[in-house]
Amino acid sequence: MYNLSSYNTGDFTLLGIPGLEQYHVWISIPFCFIYLVAIVGNSILLYLIAVERSLHAPMFFFLSMLAITDVILSTTCVPKSLTVFWLGPQKISFPGCLTQLFFLHYSFVLDSAILLAMAFDRYVAICFPLRYTAILTSRTTVKIVVGISFRSFCIFAPCVFLVNRLPFCGTRIIPHTYCEHIGVARLACADISINIWYGFCVPIMTVISDVILIAVSYTLILCAVFRLPSQDARQKALGTCGSHVCVILMFYIPAFFSILAHRFGHNVPRTFHILFANLYVVMPPALNPIVYGVKTKSIWDKVVLFWLKRLHMLECCLEP
Image (cartoon, rainbow, N blue to C red; front, side, top):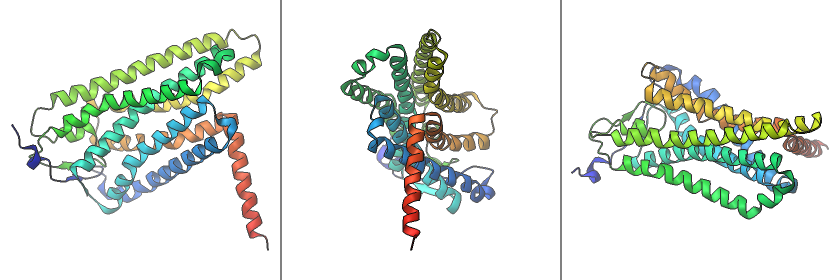
């Protein structure tokens, strides 16, 4: 038996992106800009959904939850990554590392569940429009939110305990910009087979089940749309789903690439994998509010009105 109290008290060192150390400052510029876009975009989206009564609907409630999760995902990793880029290798405590890897993976699994909930919302809205308000009541929406949040917690919480039980008696240098489950587990001086298989199989099976259910939802939606009598009705129905489909593709395609490359991509250069992993935690959170703002007319109208009011207030302040 290992004395874990003595093995797990030291700090870890985050190196950044191996092989690109001389370019860290330049890499940090687009990362910082994209992160600011993610924070500002999601904050505006949350503000509009909160203050506009016309956006108080289940679809926008799920969208606000997606925005909050995206902010958590990017804020969990990007500030520490920028510190590494600007100041060189950084220390992170073992509890801090566990906290970071938990919120990173929890946000990922929760994002997938939210996209599934949004697909269900669109399915009910298009296939059962007259019963939409009766099916997706406020109480039902809250139950869905609590259910997917609890499911995501139960899926990844065991990984934290699996890492916490490991003894780290060798190197504590992590060739990455943040802590992630398998990357930390590989530093342990013990068998990590359980970590590898649980960390790979359980999350990916959960995400695959979400993808299958989303695909079923949109198959039923398309069948219902093409049965609509008018062309305008079909275009309107497809338009309401366009933004959601874009966000789904932006989330799942790089996610599956990253997961499979981490598990099977032994020929993928580590530099490329770490750079891609950093882009993944910042790009979808930045693009999601832009996609929904442009593709969803009700949100776009509120965004335009929001900025027109701000410009008018600025003009009033500048007038003598």
